[in-house]
Image 1 (cartoon, helix red, strand yellow):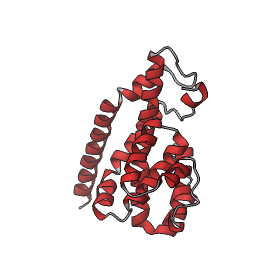
Image 2 (image 1 turned 120 degrees about the horizontal axis):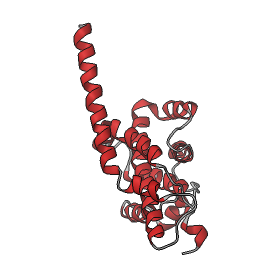
Image 3 (image 1 turned 180 degrees about the vertical axis):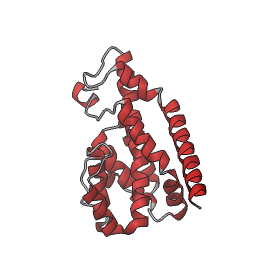
Image 4 (image 1 turned 60 degrees about the vertical axis):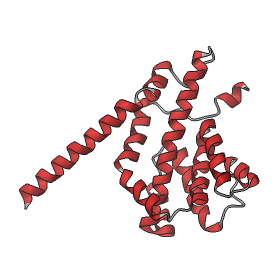
Length: 201
């Protein structure tokens, strides 16, 4: 693989990855509700995921979501365009979400408040939560996949100058304890909220 293509991807430190993971898991109910309601169609969801993946450059996610998009009925031409950041064949009512998905990835999961408000104005609160749930999920896949790829190339003796061994191990192996930490954090927050409610009632 060409050296430039190998590392045309975004790397996330363990700290940044933990923030993304926490954001997704603390909002996991939104993801469950989005899947159940199916307000975001399969094709719409795949376009969003490919828009994020185009920015982050995860080759594993590109391959996987190409296959899923094909099964969802998208043609190869549109898939290739979407993965290249070209949305000319996307439905007009999805364009705002696709550009927002790119912005979300470019900002490292910290979108500008005005961009989020624009989404709410365009799609409404409920649909915006659904779209954010899709974006949060693919951000985790991209971030983990890229660090796994960097670690794999490091083992082959071709490390990236933009990453480190400890950073790669921290994300690739650390995801398990990070998930535990987030769930503990959520449990402690719920306990604190219940105690506060009890004292004020």
